[in-house]
Image 1 (cartoon, rainbow, N blue to C red):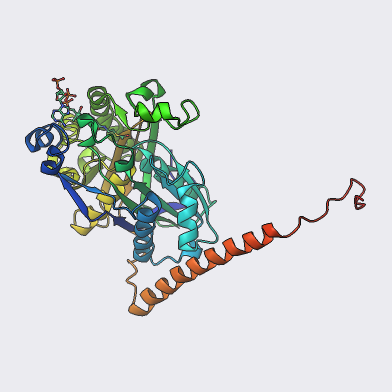
Image 2 (cartoon, helix red, strand yellow):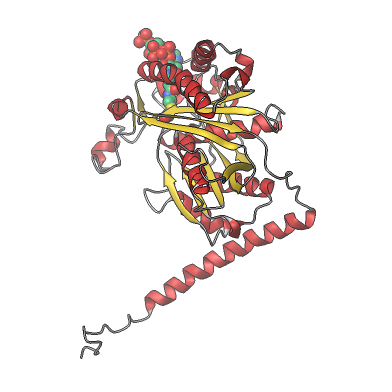
Length: 387
Ligand code: ACO
């Protein structure tokens, strides 16, 4: 899946992230639930996580990450063909969070949809975006992972509330004829494990009611031990498979960016792959598990820290609710030199976003005016006006 068949390659040419400023440490959590810094660090490796402020939402955080990614890529919003937002915590059931971001960006030529695959969402979205480019259907795809998990966490359940955090990451995929970029991808699922990690309430099976809220069915429920076993089983296998598909020896992969859920899971994968831990990018100590946002945030930080350089082979590997898991092998390195925006271009970009906001308000006002007008009179089958 996702290999180029017609000479069109999908390159990652921009990346951006946003994390809320509020830091919640393990010591803070120990004030809320019966836990300790020692338990959380030894069982998970997490020291702190970011928690969304009152104004942060999946759309607002995804928007900031998207703007940064577009700026890095030197891509204007109207050039984007497709926006995919991977999220388990969308702004609404509908409209899609992707449409809200499309509107705020002023990406007037883009299709937009959300993708739900638990913590694997970003990996699935990346695969879909890469295929959209490789098929020739699209040229520029914006792939975003954004989560406000703190809003669906049971702050009385110590087995889950210590694990998760909020944030967003985005990448820009661009079509290019030069080889490299997304070399191979696998996406897998096993729905028989769906109840191991679930938000049972608020869907069509258990619509929101006083009863579902009283029972806390709108919160994350997880069988941590089973999810742990599943993750340890699939991480190394999918990394090997995606490397084999690309014809790359796993030992020649410079960096593995895994889903940042638990340090013990990452260490188990490193042992199974017979690779040193240093080959894995790890930032879960600062952010906890940010679900769909974890891999794009990690990509940004790996680049910032000089751990991902042009020509490097990098494996991205994720797992999550569904159950789902996926891996991608990327040959890092944009087909063109990174676009450094001039001051003028930055001001211009800000004006574009301002324009997008004004356009959005105008469109809403027009819709309201239109809805106040009488409907055009219907015609009968022969085109004659009904009396
Ligand atoms: N503080 C103190 N004690 C705790 C806490 C806590 N925060 N949480 C659980 N415990 C207790 C349990 O009650 C249990 O006590 P008991 O033995 O008296 O019953 C004990 O610690 C051990 O519990 P386990 O669940 O066996 O602990 P484990 O070593 O498995 O670690 C953990 C739990 C960290 C949740 C681990 O199972 C894990 O990380 N699983 C994977 C979770 C994951 O990655 N989920 C995200 C998937 S991606 C997505 O789509 C969202």
